[in-house]
Image (cartoon, rainbow, N blue to C red):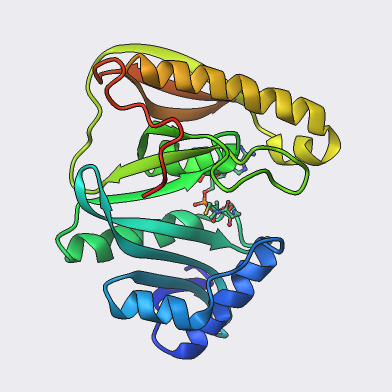
Length: 241
Ligand SMILES: CC(C)(COP(=O)(O)OP(=O)(O)OC[C@H]1O[C@@H](n2cnc3c(N)ncnc32)[C@H](O)[C@@H]1OP(=O)(O)O)[C@@H](O)C(=O)NCCC(=O)NCCS
């Protein structure tokens, strides 16, 4: 039996706890304030928390209703699990609960962004949840405090079908320790960022779609499959959402 459980936010205090979780993880960024997340939920957004038996929130996820090139969707603004509780399946359980809540609204697609060089996120988003990506956003939030461009994948999580089709495949490897590299060797981190940007933008322009991610010995490997028409769906420099 696990020592945590997941439930929707029920009280204003849950939104306040979410603020504490966000601050613990993204200390440099402005968190979503409780009155905003409450308003989002009151108009169809989904906010779920992972709690200990003592009622302490150790993770949360928030999505809002959005419009995409495919029509109505949810956009997941953040998913977070505090350090010390990671790698226990809580992130996946939060996302699966989000999936059920969004499907219950009759909506079939959730989008969100993440840094394609973060292997843990890639493992969760692409490998475990089976989201796909064909949209690359350059420097989505402006350079981070170290000057590194905040490039992001915008993923599509199709909730009631698997959009994967057979096709030519290619692989793009990434390091498993990009987070540590950013701190210890910013120059190498920048050069990895630029190389990945060039590789993914070119692949997306040729109709390749990110369809899988696996950890192989000392690196992470994205698999891309060519099933989109070339140049049709590239998202370089598109706004999010
Ligand atoms: C991303 C996040 C929500 C995942 O939560 P989590 O509870 O650790 O997720 P899970 O345990 O379900 O899955 C993590 C997977 O990554 C794997 N993993 C951990 N470190 C890894 C690494 N360096 N490289 C590759 N995979 C890694 C874990 O082994 C696990 O896979 P497994 O179940 O096959 O063993 C959490 O790490 C987090 O809050 N990160 C900081 C905030 C963030 O980046 N949020 C997402 C963007 S908004």
